Length: 123
Image 1 (cartoon, rainbow, N blue to C red):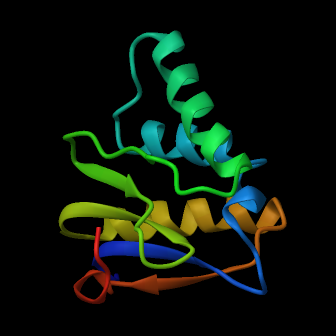
Image 2 (spheres, one colour):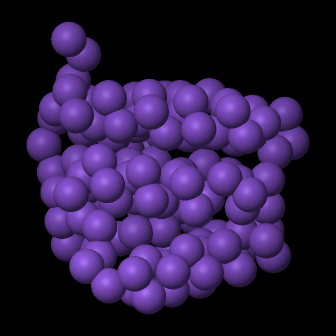
């Protein structure tokens, strides 16, 4: 079984952040559920979705989910992508990355998945 510390969703074929906005609520909710980081308060979840979605719709870099925890959902400054990062190399990063990739594909967001390329990306 493959293990990774990060799984990257690189947007392809002129896709932009705004293209992610329509599937972002499902991406974030799935990420939080799969990593056991779901906020107890539904209003907090809706706030995270709203703040990120507003930036995505403006085609700007959103915050993602960069809180302390087992994993983070990060939108770097350097290129049109986002990635999940685990604190250790694990098959869980691979499983969740593949699950989120299916959501993006189903939503028509053309992307490519890359593994463990954090050394070449600034956060």
